[in-house]
Image (cartoon, rainbow, N blue to C red; front, side):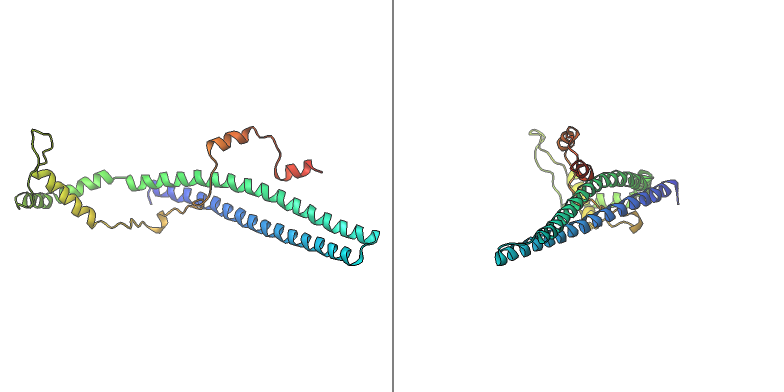
Length: 223
């Protein structure tokens, strides 16, 4: 393994660690959303139960009121807490997405260097090794009568036989190349943020001037 491959391996491992953190944060966000939904349902059930009791009896005792009040207040506090947690998680997820984008860029840059190393020299060597074959095909196509010059030098639209032959050869080579572009699995780089929406420069600029607390900071201020 050469130096570039070692560098790629190291950077990819760093990227994968950050990607794992991103996955964990998204899982925690999903869990928190489910908890909020459950608490909201529980709160609605408590309120509905109370309303039904009032309709049936027309009144309730002080102890009953305190019990109901404590229950609904407790549920509302739990919802507020989980919503604050969700806000903080959303910010952590965004920051982690930025980290991943940066790390992935480093991995891609290193991979590009791996594919680029010696490519010009190797291609030149291949051309030299196959020069006689390419010359033969070009000559045969040129004199085959399959291609005819068009246009006029007077109108600057002249296209010679040589150009038609080159276009034909390039077209044949292009059609014979696989379009899968598959690479070794160890060189593949997933994109965990493929469907993630990043903020625009305008949004980032606007947030710099937003002094309002969010998440747990907002929750503490409301105590």
